[in-house]
Image (tube, rainbow over all chains, first blue to last red; front, side, top):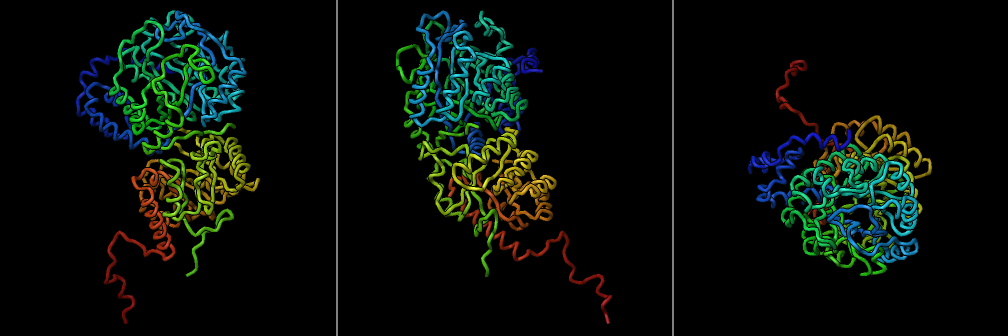
Length: 367
Length: 258
């Protein structure tokens, strides 16, 4: 059984009807519980639960401090290629968009590493557009070997691989995987991803399981918020994370809440997720899965990131560039999305300290 | 009165509080917490050693008078724990090591089998091994036989602040294991620490309940006082407790009538 089979069990479930019957009492009861089940989680995601957001936030804060302390791990993404075989309408790297395409040379990767590590960052996310011809596994392995000279923790966000390729990258030094399902709604997914390997919904959904079997330390999931309705996509992201935690006990499970940001192309998000809903989602996931990393990227504004810290955030990107090799060559290519918080690492650290938290620059040791 | 010294792993300690370091909001608090708790040992995750960021490097903030005990946080099996221990020794030149092997990231419970394996190998390499473990007699014996200098059973799952939930098992360890028993994880209140000391633990280790307090310095002092009180009570031998009232007119007193 895989998560695909788990998700199938919800096929007959009438979300609308269930949510319509959620009462304030049910929500209060779910907030009070020590161990929440999936329906408690759904109760906390319901529109009615937004009336209880302060109580949720208080509990999310309390749980987060207990389990993670007042610590925020910082990292940055390094985009090594924007070649992509997919035509996701919401993404700048889509084949539809006429943008300058490039793959970083190993020398350019080295130069970018020098700059990022000079900020004091010791954790990196290697990002590549989805093209196994432009960025084949051998290229990625070589990238990781360079990154290892500068960073202690290396995660990847690349096209889905099979287990043996994940194992090969782990042997090169990769610790973790980030992959977004984009939307958990299978029908919508198929409409949004009409060709290329990405059109295989199930293969993408089971990606974390292949990395988990390759013994990855970090498995990070997420839905691209704005593609589909907020409640069901957050709900299934949480169920997915819970499933992974039960199946791969030695992995640290993480979740991101990327909201669609302006990019090249004409795609308009189906829904704009307001801040209040984002906060509701963060609190609900913390109550549902106490031990989960929650990651907020520079897609969000400095002000919002600052205010999200006490709610249970454990990881933040800082000084990010979403352009290929953008630390060395700023403004020379289209980024995957527009960065909203452009603060330097020092400024992000300052902001974290001011909030009464501690920035963590290094939280692993390459073995 | 003679000083009550804890001899452990080549250290002679007057304090019986070990402080964990992973959750503080600011490393600048560390010297104040050391001072108020009077702790002489602080554990630090090797994964957090960070010589490129002095302000964020926890090692820069620990007073020189304090023993730094590296821990293997993040290790998922014995071989990873061993590698981390060796890195720690090469980096900060200490033989002290607290083995943490955790293969379950939901509950963060230690893996006793892997811990005992790592303990055996590291003890042979002259490490002074402290083993974080689930309170279990067989595993504690294995660790003792493998050369552990202290056994560190959890009081409750880490981060829960629930207190000494493993009390009955810990009492068995105190009775049966010659190696010092140090309660690690789960203690929430100074009274929990006091209880550990009253029943005969050699020391306690604390982090979450200090770091999550709005006043970490004051609560650290409260833990110090509680540990001292509990230790004195243990040394003084507490009067036994009884569920029944003790009769002032014994029923068998007539046997001694003349």
